Structures are given as structure tokens and as C-alpha cells.
Length: 158
Image 1 (cartoon, rainbow, N blue to C red):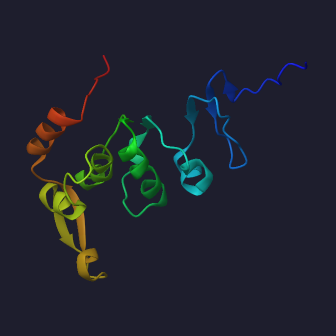
Image 2 (cartoon, rainbow, N blue to C red):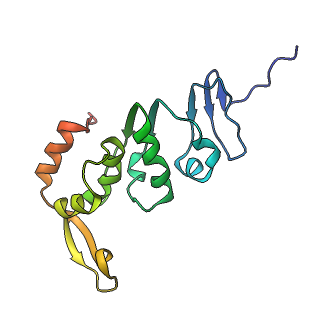
Image 3 (cartoon, rainbow, N blue to C red):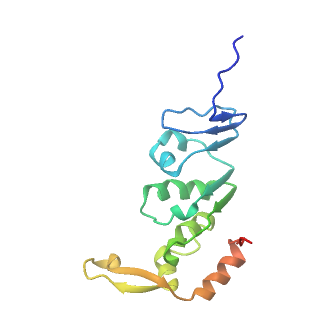
């Protein structure tokens, strides 16, 4: 019998999905896939995962983005979800909501969260709820206390 060909993207039970043509082996216990590739390929969404680790989770900051719409439900369905980021919110507290929603579904509607924790500025070029831009933070001590008591573990470099 011919030995299996070495595949640097499939080591033991770990499989790295490099493109949409890949087929995940049935015996794979760990799959590594980019957010955008997962969002673009329906075939990878057929499996329910027990444990999800989302690296660079600050990329899940916009509820309207396809990647966020694909990944957040996956994180919500998993038994255990871990979100990893060196910078959870890049610009404003409203960017945290999608990540919080992934870990704590139904915690707070995005609008209510943004109104509570962001300054608001009217944008004269938009109408309706879209007419409000959420800018820098407010109630930041309260938000920090909430995060550190519920979902945030912060490690500082020494």
C-alpha cells in the first residue's frame, strides 16, 4: 500500500483550509479557517462545532459585514467559544457589541449598547437610525467593570 502523500496543511487531526476547493477529512478534530473563507463557502457551515476559537476577534466588529453574520451564529452555537484579540475595540465601544453578542446572545441590542457606551453625533447625510454616528466612549469605567467581571481576561506584556 502506498503511504499517504504529505500535506503540510493536514497534520494528524488538524486541518488547515487554504481555499474553497478543500474538503475537510472526516477524522479532522481541529479545523483552521479564515473568517472570510468560512463566510464565503457554504459547505463549511454544515458542521456544528463544540469548541470555537476566534483569533483576531476585533475583526468581528460590524454586524452588517458578511464575515460577522457568518461567524457570530457559529460562536453562539458552540458549547465553548473563545475570542482572542490584542485590541478588542479599535476605535469605539460600539465595535465590541458583535463580540459580546457572540458570547452572550441577547445581552443587549446593538443600538441600546451603542447609545449607552458611545457619544453620538448626527450625520446630516443619512436618515433614520443611520443618521447617528457613534463616536468615542462614555461610561467607560462602567463598561470596563462589566467586561472584566464577565468576559474579558487581559494579560499585560512585561
